[in-house]
Length: 223
Image (cartoon, rainbow, N blue to C red; front, top):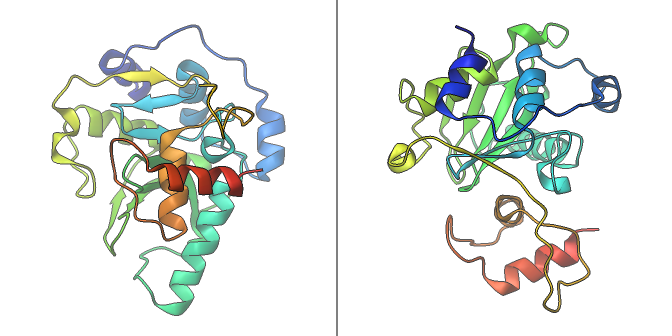
């Protein structure tokens, strides 16, 4: 049984597979991508696992959860700054960390792109949202998701109640707002707002309603 098959049994695929222009995606990223991620992205599309884990996708509904959007580069730049200044210990070279997902609490999920030209050998790392801890998984992304969502792997940074409900995948759909001052803006993802707020020094709750002043600041900072 492949990791994707096992994942599909845990979290049924919500619809038909997507057609993704991988040549264009890899050209934009200037790197090849693991085959398991390609299959995962095609089968599931953009969305969230267990209401908590957002995997970046070439068709992410906002720039903040889009694989070719600004977040991977911004996160790497912040890691490099932390590494150079000794803010937090980072167990991997920041130049070999590529953000592939984010949680509702602000943890980032990374590919360890070493060696960079052999994506089938890339492993997974998870940082702590507001602390120094890191977790490394010795396997690819789909295996990581399957192991976590089946309960075989416990990531210290993830909440203990993550699997209180049966694992599920929820597709991401654009949610157009009709109330001022946000009526003319692009669809948003609350995880993207939380991740942006944490990266920019805001005290944002990990769950529940996002304070309007934080959401407004995010809107003003988003093209």
